[in-house]
Amino acid sequence: MTQQPDATWYQDTVTAGPGGVMTDDVGIVTGDVTVQTTLEDDGRTARVTVQYTGAEEWYTMTGSPAPVPGGDLAAYHLDMLGRVRRGQAAQAS
Image 1 (cartoon, rainbow, N blue to C red):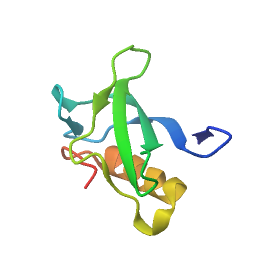
Image 2: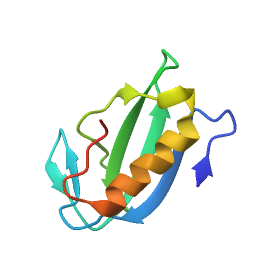
Image 3: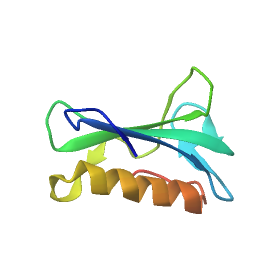
Image 4: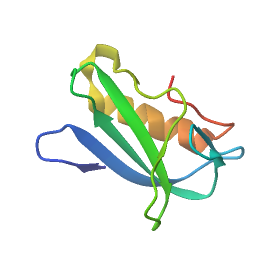
């Protein structure tokens, strides 16, 4: 897991499961994707974005921003990675 030194964001590359990830911007994203989970300024919610690995464009995962359970951004990011791996039009909430 890639982490910024102040732990306000995490980023990883995974393969989206069957049905991919639902985004607000372009609908379903499939295949190898990079997932970034970034803590919002309020310190309680996080924005989850995805991109086709190696591309420049980032897309907001549907349901994002969403509350970070227990304030544990690392655990929330790992949960998002699991959702993306499972696919089925994964969403952030």
